[in-house]
Amino acid sequence: MALRIALAQIDTCVGDLDGNSQAVLAWSQRAAEAGADLVVFPEMTITGYPIEDLALRASFRRGAERALERTAAELDARGMGDLAVLVGTVGDTASREHEGAPARPTNQAVLLQHGTVARRYDKHHLPNYGVFDEFRIFAPGDDICVIDVRGHRVGVVVCEDIWQDGGPVSEMDENEVALLVVLNGSPFEEGKGHIRTELAARRARQVDAPVAYVNMVGGQDDLVFDGGSFVVAADGTLLASAPQFVEHLLVWDLDDGREPRTGEIAPHLDADAEVYQALVTGLAGYARKNGFRSVVLGLSGGIDSALVAAISADALGGQNVIGVSMPSRYSSEHSKDDAADLAKRIGADYRVQPIGTIVDAFEAQLGLEGVAAENLQARVRGMILMAISNAEGPLVLATGNKSELAVGYSTIYGDAVGGYAPLKDVDKSRVWALSRWRNNAAVDAGQIPPIPESSITKPPSAELRPGQTDQDSLPPYDLLDEVLDAYVEHAEGRAELLARGYDPEVVDKVLSLVDRAEWKRRQYPLGPKVTALAFGRDRRLPITTRWREP
Image (cartoon, rainbow, N blue to C red; front, side, top):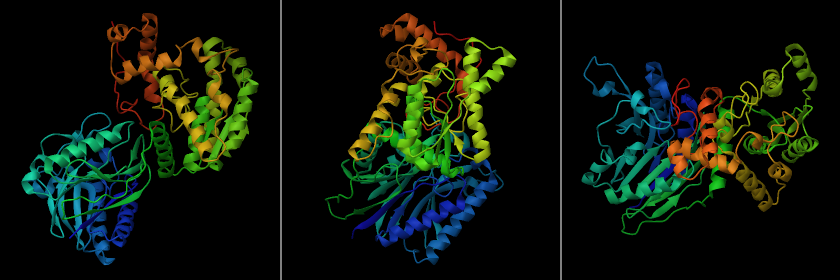
């Protein structure tokens, strides 16, 4: 008899124990109505993920356990007692330690059935690299988990357990499982999707059984989860897949016969579509989960603010975007026109607040010149945006990109102010590519492109002095981004960069700028991670250091 499995890729919120539990009940109901025998939810479903040091609070663990028990009882009360429900939560070691030993938190998968917590499994492999810090927080498990669902033996593991050789998966073939299910909280980064499916295919061949991989979706602080749940056959063939960046119930049947069934296969997103949707998902999740209904940003007419505005409109609706033009004596007419045009295209609340008289008042008091005077303009603009936020409640968005952040090309307490930075992990070259992709997508859909063409084609400029362009003080962005990719993303030193053939003057300038800007990056708002190495959790360097590349 076939076993019907439902993979529920849902969007949870850290700490919302009641809301997450209600989501489990609602999606379990959908699974039951679809005829599922087993529904699998992502890693840490009840608690949200990642919970970081909340795991260390006994009060939080007790709250999660109460929520878990209520969920089990309510499933039974709603007539879903026979449905096997696998969810993630935080557990602790108290039940398997010697009496009197202090409890330690665990990353746990549990089986809910017949109104009770029928089985528990603690994640074995605890990642301690990149954005992950689980080895410090959790205690590892050491048991194998194989459950019986209508006569089918189903192995259960959690996320990193399939990424590391050995451990629970290596013992699954000894248990002759018919299916291996994996509960995941795997953050998005460009190019990671095919790595997941290739890894799952390898594990499927290892256990000689299909692998069902369920991943969460949504934004959580600086992480984005893209869903993309899937099933692969014992030989590694893709049998079913869910779309990315949306909640979804993927239903698939495990047959007793030799030929595996093929289910729904979601369309593949190209690279720019993936990254753009990740940015939208990250902003939407951060705003919603922190109670923001609108955002405010400075509209300069340039490409960065234009792309952030388009992302904001897609995430929250154009009517919930406040775009503020803050012209100075150096602002060009075409920049002001482009800002107004963009706001009209996306339906934003467009405001004009000249900064000339405010800057004049500061300069009259302080007598500033040069860079100090330029930075003053940026800081006045930041002050205006924060004042609007304080008065009306929108979330302030910083519009700087990864290239600028890398070399410190931003004004601290000026254009660096804000609560969220959508382009923090997007280099300048990609900003242009994503802008063109978004406009082309609009044309394909029969819509008006959101970004004015002149914002894409004109030379980038902060417009803080007459005739200024970014390339007055920076290498061309295509060259800059190549050097930054090698130095920041791949940790290559000066010798390696020179061996690649880069000009020594360019290398020395870029490395010096990057090394001197660490203090600025520490104070920059968080933003969504979309590359393998984002500033923040992925890259931790001392601010005070005398090391310089030889």
